[in-house]
Length: 151
Image 1 (tube, rainbow, N blue to C red):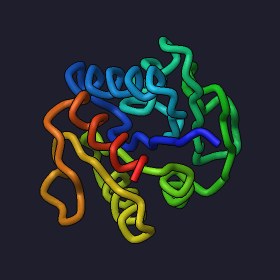
Image 2 (cartoon, rainbow, N blue to C red):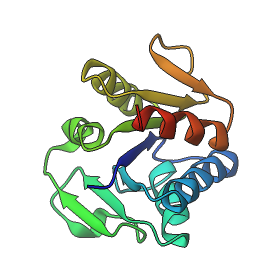
Image 3 (cartoon, one colour):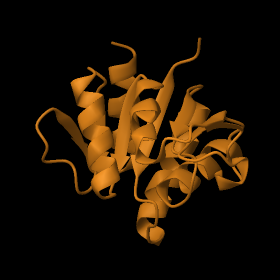
Image 4 (cartoon, rainbow, N blue to C red):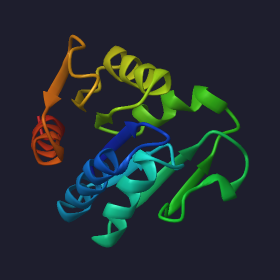
């Protein structure tokens, strides 16, 4: 089975954060990993867009019960009906998670990943959390994430 990298982060974001997420999605797909995310907008959409541009597979773990919640770049939408509790499924379906900005939802995913033994890399706001590997940009985040997947 192919290795998976989860992208977690802001549901709405500005152009700089969007560019980081899209670049990361591109690197993930280009290197043969599948991308897992919450399947909606902001960082999730940008990462899926980057992955799709490289022919990658995108998996969106959705909070509700409507396929229309998925952004247009999600190949495999997964309905959960769990709301924010779906955050556990996002990180548990990946070998490593990369956090890009975000708020309380992203923080919950970071905590769930760390508690489950899933490595976490962060670009931006979450770099100071114990156990989280800090990265300055998408390229460094990908390099760290891919090295953690192969360990």
